[in-house]
Length: 254
Image (cartoon, rainbow, N blue to C red; front, side, top):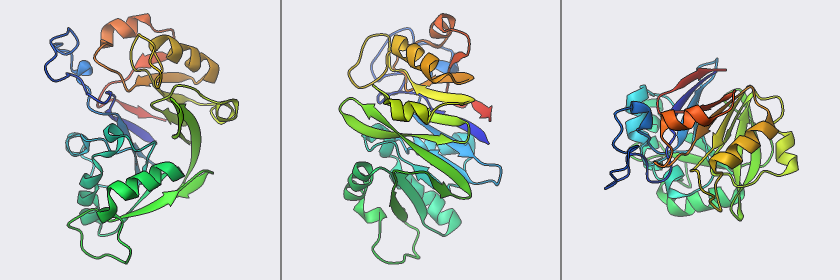
């Protein structure tokens, strides 16, 4: 499968509006970060998104994404959800609903906030998103691909990471239980939350991300969901072997 990093930024993105810090003023395109999301293209051509941040339209145009077979939601915070309306373009292109997945709390929150996208009867008009909600807790199949939900803590809230094959995506993480840690063994690629240098109550800091990456033991770990406090080259120079700073548009083959 191929992974495209649609965005690796935190809720404000980088540059941050009105900020004149070195990262926000940097000429390095790897310091320009849209809100956090990936697209995974499977061997059979199916495309899965993880989250639909508010930059989805721009990200899809940039990466020439014209198909979405499902969306895996980690949680319903605005920076991971509010591009949902742009799924209507894929419904229009494909002439069918798009299935979306998340835990019970996430799906309830999404359906409540975007009720118009979840019609109660069969829909054949595609001027708005037409979605099918699925609450998940156990491994499930989508477009011929098995997906394993991995519960993690985002402060005091339980959200979902996801494992697809030997790749796992963990954003907005503050703690990982032993049971979830077991589900992350044997990974080739780990995409891991890393907000900033300083401690944050609902995200991993750089130091914490390094510790968790060592515990999980993936062959390669890529840091995501970064604020403008983290400059690409400076952070890259501080990381141990096997850890890398991700950037918008990065593509990986797994």
